[in-house]
Image (tube, rainbow, N blue to C red; front, side, top):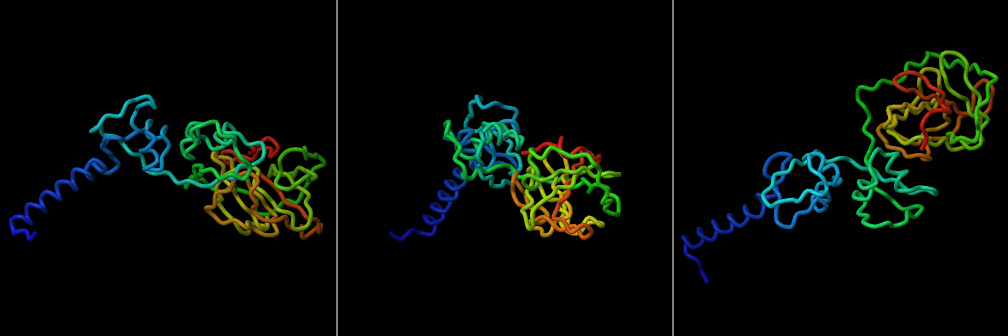
Length: 272
């Protein structure tokens, strides 16, 4: 059936009206959403790539609050996420604690609605650490002191290399030197974001990692580096390989940890 000009105009108006009725509830304004029929906290969290707790918190409501059609909600800026590979001994509590979120948020992010057992090797979505753009690299002396004390550390702790001989560094820098085998992988002892990679003052190739707690981990004397500035690394992820000391010829790597720009004992630094 061929419509007249006025018939086509009327049909256009009807179609536009229907379109607006469907689409307008979705976007009331920048960063705002108007609740539509069928919406739930869970469905909205999936749509905006947020956890239920994040969405509730942004609106001063709880998970038990009932959503009403026409209700206006604030939608916080979408967060960025990374992938974490489940390791032996991991639990929901441990992974949530290391990433500064609740167990409920962790399950929401990964669409887990029951007490599913964590499978080694499974991939979980976790929030990405955001580097504090105002944070500065530690003020290390311009030259590697290469001065070691007779004090030995506990080799049974989690270190960047396996079963090292742990020797404390003397002088202005409170760090440790770790023995390693040739080309051994150097791994992160704490999850965080890479602040810097490359040659740094006399310390050879260095990787600085900033954890969510604000601690900065400096892995120096590396033979090679496999990460890039801005990368997010998890506990146990390779940063590079151990280097060879140009004076002693020994394969080793050094670790320094800083909290609020002050050096701390690496053995007492958070791990995991």
